Length: 388
Image 1 (cartoon, helix red, strand yellow):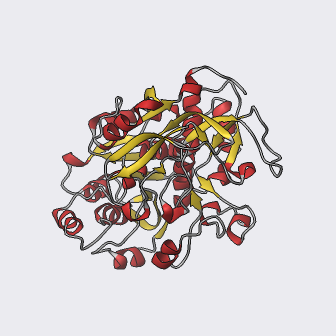
Image 2 (cartoon, rainbow, N blue to C red):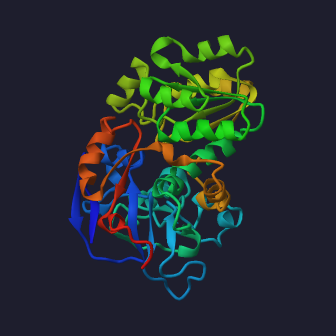
Image 3 (cartoon, rainbow, N blue to C red):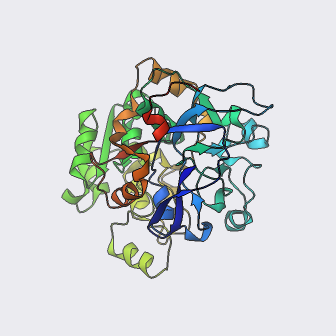
């Protein structure tokens, strides 16, 4: 089969690998977190030829004897998190913290614990072959696959693989509820997908913070209040000038690559820190006393000048972590199928899967048409097949 294989920094090649699969992929996409490997920040966890990707849908081609919830011919969403369903954390529905599916000693040495396995996300998360491929072998398929109707738009389902549950996870961590004033730093696919569900959950106001005019325009289109970083020397001060009590909920959705200050830019360039603290400091400053903050945009290493005193003294709750995808289904699928919520707005471009290498380069350079994500369609997906 053909698959998107990591061959080095800024090098993704479409190669041929042995077929070892139960799901035949019809559509997949590139995640912002895939760029950590593509651009070189997580090269230490990669091996040449690793298959990329953790956002895909497809048709079940075969199932093992232990699988009971899905069958051959079913259309499924492949969730990114591979969980066992039985360990201490899975029993608490904290699936991304699964103790059993990730053998990485390197991660355990880094953080004291291992997180769950994740498709196509380096050997730090288990080295599982990803689903930017024509087939994908899915471990623990009853928990990792979500059966979906045949007549739902593919873009909606691809968005449900990772973007929407990650965004929902951000809202859950921040405890977004009716009447809240929310600020979201970052207007990429995840940031926008946090802003829209925040309003869906009843937030009174949602501030969308970014520097890209096109993305800010998308945020404004569904009712968020755009704040252009380029228009304010101090975004936190601006937020406090219009919301004197501060934000009830502050959510970070931009990640460690989005440094804004000269200090953090230089420290990252010379290796004195791995993660920038600019965004987190701004969020802590802008969030009210006893408010909540969620970190969603991926931090892996360390940051300097972290305002721990302000965090503690303001009695702010700070949480973060990878999505607990399985926890949020079938609810998320139900609201999409019923028409209550449409996540497909993040898929601003469609292309053939065979052009995956070109789309990695475009995504890294912020040149995807429409400004957000590309929906890649395999040859099987283009055939219009509805079942096997």
